[in-house]
Image (tube, rainbow, N blue to C red; front, side):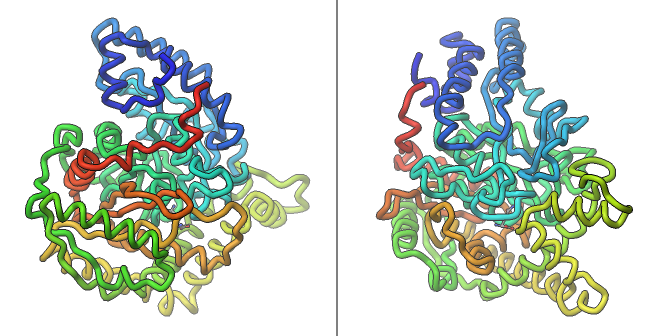
Length: 492
Ligand code: GLN
């Protein structure tokens, strides 16, 4: 078969179970595509061909023996922020260019237990700080829809790999939009679960009160399969919640669109930088949901203006604390011939971290310093609570909240936006993390340059099933999620 990369996760699962093709054939097919096409897309930092083929053979044996799960033998790409035993985990940083984790992240371990085949580790903004994947030590990844544009970030490698059909699905992480915005830029479906739904053990920390892992794939159905593997309590992560998980696949039709109340925040559609095409596509998708039976309800989210300043205090503050562990002593990059311990610390950190990471460490350290802690950090925490309350109030009258995932489509590579311009691009995603809510991106069309546009739906706590179900039914009624970038059409 030459078009294995066109199959959905359900089709792959059924094809493997029915012996239409083997996991080895499927894995070889993807490895060939990566070898041929990733020189252009540059989504992988590390390809683990040998290990993947060994896992594929083990999967084929399990399928024959009747011990397979629904996903045994299906390939996956992991964001290079998830620790993988024996395989380099870089977080897109020179600091960890030589880091080989002695253990697997829980998400990776669960994937292995489910029989997934790891194709490799994919690119990202350094320590997940960024919105373009250009902040990676390994260079920029290209957007499969237009190789001169960015795939978004920080999970840009995950998004580009899936959009170019170089992996059937991928893991991502989202601290302030890093699953939803690249999914939007690359025409994919991506789910940021509620804070605590997915274990963060072995997921390299950026901002610990905001970080959350989740699935990135072509459709809500594909995401549901991966959520079934990723979700759940983990004794190794005290922030993971002890709460039963849903069967996300079984619940794909579980939410009625008829009567679903979708909140449309007035403030979101009046944002100065909102691109006219993005606005139009999002409004068309909402009209479609209305035709399917949903009710659109105008709502207020009065704290919208506070999102960017609040997030850009709290996230750097936590980052400055988390990243203090990279000291050049225990592991990671170490500067050559230090004259003393201070020189070792200073040079290891200034040589090992890139510019954006250093900027955030400086901002965060400043915001946490004795004289400014109350004025900045404590104030931001109070505003954070108000943002959360704003959402909870909205959920008294609506079931989900609609928004663009990003104010624009994918930027050009090298567009060189100022830090503040770049941060303003996160306006629609960061409040969800500040509040700890789940949210999903679904592709809903294209702008005038044929770049994908995404609709974001934000749900109340633990409503992942509902979000996947709404998007699944929208995808049954439309075909935006089936569109492929030209490079994905190519065969290897
Ligand atoms: N773009 C945002 C930032 O740079 C979000 C990144 C993320 O979710 N990891 O902080």
